[in-house]
Figure 1 (cartoon, rainbow, N blue to C red):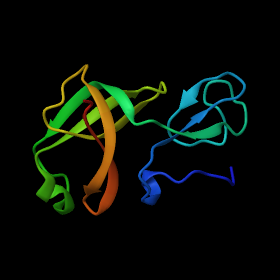
Figure 2 (figure 1 turned 120 degrees about the vertical axis):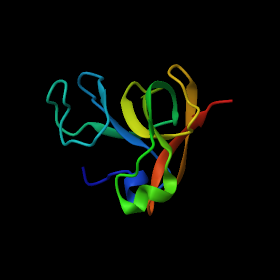
Figure 3 (figure 1 turned 90 degrees about the horizontal axis):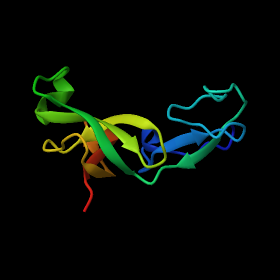
Length: 119
């Protein structure tokens, strides 16, 4: 796993997921093995950023002083086009079933994936 792709956790505008060469399953959150079959070193790929909203939750109370300026903000679960589900920020008017596309914006001092309705 020495040739890791950089993603939003390193300040790069990208979402990286893994795909297993043995069983074909995809996973989000890097691991040194496939969570489905145990095969070593799944391949890393960049996601397209396209997906569908699975769930949404509007946060109206700041958890920390750093997030106070962002209230209210929306946390969404997105089923990506590549087949994994991820949690991210999104427009406040998103609803379950909306087609979305990722962009990136600062939140509490960090660059984060942010989903908006696809056009």
